[in-house]
Image 1 (cartoon, rainbow, N blue to C red):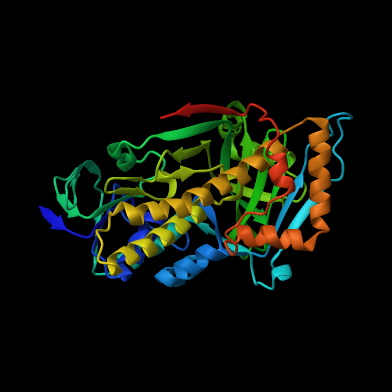
Image 2 (tube, rainbow, N blue to C red):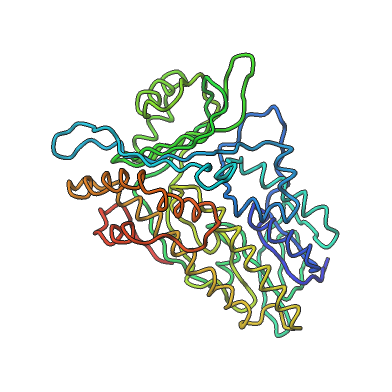
Length: 434
C-alpha cells in the first residue's frame, strides 16, 4: 500500500484539480487526494448554489489544461456587462437619490465578454475529467490525509485508508480549513465579517441576461448573476442571487416559504431585478478574510483557499487560486529543468514572492469596496457617489479596472480607491489569529 510519486496534491477542488492537471501535462507523476468523489452533473438538474465568475485569465488557463471545452459542453453563461451602484439612503435627508452607477462593457475593450458565470461543480467535474485522462495522475477519491512526515529526500504522506504516498513535494489545496496547513504548523490571520452572505438559485421571466450587477446597501451588497435557460416554453431563465446582511436577517429569510421569500427578495432588491417565478435552493454562510502566515514550510506549499480567502464581493477567490496554480506549476517546471529538488526553498519562496503581494492587493481592493460602501458617514457617502458618477464618464479608468478584474492586467488600479481604503474601518470585522 505504498506509492511513489513526484508530488502529492491534497484537495481536488477547482484549484487543486487544475494544478494537478497542469503538472501531469508537464511530465510529473502525481497523487491527487480528496475526501469526496468526482462531482455528478446532469444537464436537466437545477443549478449548483455555488457559482463563480471566471475571468478571461482563468478561461485562458483552463483552455490550456483542456478543461474549457468540457465546461462548454456542460453549461456556462457569458456576461458582457457588469454594473455597480449605490442604493444607500442619503444620510442627512433619508431619501435614495438617483443612484450613481458605473457599468463596465466588454465592447469598450474590444472583447466578446468580460467573463463567465459557471457553477462550481461544472468547473470541478471538467477538471477531474482532465486529470483522469492523464495516466501520470492517480486520483484517491473518498480519502484524506492524516499525517505528513518530512524526510531528507522527500515526504511521506499517510492517508486515512492506510495507504502511504512518498513524494518530493506536498501541495495543500484543501480549502480554508486546510488539514495540510495544520499538519505543517502554518498559522493564519483571520478577519471575520459581521455580515453573512445568502445565495439563492432562482428562476426569472425573460431570456438569459448578459449583465451581472451589484447594488450596495448599508447592510451590504445584493447581486444578480445570470445563469442558463430554465424553460424555453415559459420564457424562464436561471440566476444566482447574493444578499449580504446580518445573520439574524438571513436566518429569517431562509425560514420563509418559497412564495414569501420571492416576495421579500423582489421588494428588497433594486428594480433592475427581473420578475422572479421560482426558487430552488438557498443557503447562507459566514464570510471571512484569511491569510496564511507563510505559503511554504519544509516540503509543503499552499495554494488557493488554503493560503488565502477574501471577501467574495466580486467572485475573485477562485481566479486568485487559478493564478496561484499557474504560478506554482511554472516554478516547479523550472526547478525540474534545473535538476533541483522540487521542494528546494529557493524555488518555493519565489512562488510566495510572486503570489503573496498579488493576493494582498486583491484583499485590499475587496475590503476597500466593502468598507467604502458600508459607510454611512455623509462625506464618504458623497465621495463614493461622486466617484461612481465620475468613473462612468472616464472610459480609460473603467477599462483599467475591467482589465484587472478580467485577469488581463496583474497590477491593481490605484488612486481614489487607495486613498479611500485608508479611512477608519467601521467595525465590521472581528479579528482572530491562529
